[in-house]
Image 1 (cartoon, rainbow, N blue to C red):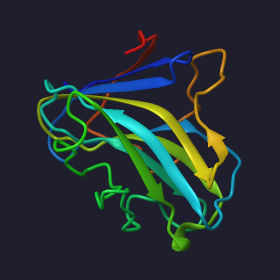
Image 2 (cartoon, rainbow, N blue to C red):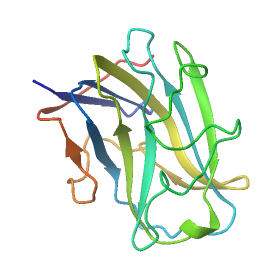
Image 3 (tube, rainbow, N blue to C red):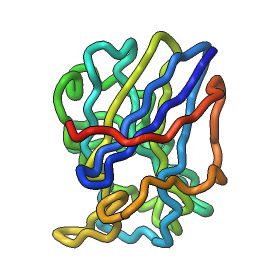
Length: 178
């Protein structure tokens, strides 16, 4: 049986997910349906932490756009040249430490944002990762901050693709600051 657990602590701006995978599993969980249109110079920023006990060292954030596809398939890379795709192995960067990612949104993805998603792309074992300080910035200006000031732990409805393959259960709870 596969399962998904997501937890949020708004005071520390941390989100985590755990899964037990199967074959070709993925889970794209909508975190925000913010009303925003990306512009030239926009950068996705977040930190990711992957505990060493995770079977696969993958995960991350994706953006779905109204007509420009998604960030994961755009070829975008972070400041170290590491692919923005959530199926990318981050073992050299994020295991047992916070890895700051700064990903320029390509000109081919300047469009209305339909969803910001937390993504699992792992197929084996039990996997876990944490996200914090999730935002879109343009220069020094923060355009969007996801889970920075919300007073309740509430995810939007799951309305945007690609959704889930190989996951069946979701539980929301509070996560202590780490």
